[in-house]
Image (cartoon, rainbow, N blue to C red; front, side):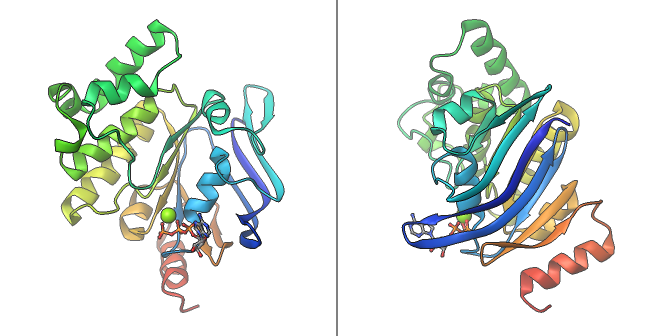
Length: 242
Ligand SMILES: Nc1ncnc2c1ncn2[C@@H]1O[C@H](COP(=O)(O)OP(=O)(O)OP(=O)(O)O)[C@@H](O)[C@H]1O
Ligand SMILES: [Mg+2]
């Protein structure tokens, strides 16, 4: 099976353990939602996948086309090279560079044909970025900046995209558009995506499966489809009432 497999990952900051025995799987072609309220460990988990946070135990494996690669302990740029595209919380664009410069910067060090293909793919996926390619990133709206942040990850030819709270700071109508755009990436462009979100109603509408994190533990793993019962279970877990 092609995918990303986390087994019993423990990680934190200094003496503080934030993630406890987290196991989850993202299979090729899926859009998996990682749900949880503020401060429950979503970003820490994504940062552990990327190598910004070093796990103290467990394994983070990329299984792809018969090869199995341990990601844990590698530098973030190596993890990206191995096929993990990262869209950080808060977007982290370079504000005084243009849209196209932000995209080209993300592809620095890659081959020219890849760069050209990926740029074309970004512009096809997010036409507003093509229209505004010469506009400074800082002058784009929040929703447009989030599209640019996602496109920037696409410039690294990812096998799996890791997207941290794409809806944060966006107006409700833009949240829906953003989540739909991510769904389209998965359903029409065959991307595999792990998406952390607090907007769980919107996230479960589009996700193939979901995990709920509470206090750094997976309290619910919805392994087989998001039916009404599963959504109710998630809702209760998110509200802390079960
Ligand atoms: N750099 C850091 N140093 C120390 N503690 C941290 C650091 N970053 C996060 N934490 C702590 O780790 C815990 C989990 O935070 P994390 O950012 O992973 O949660 P989150 O689910 O992404 O929250 P949010 O929805 O607000 O983004 C929190 O208690 C937080 O205070
Ligand atoms: Mg976070």
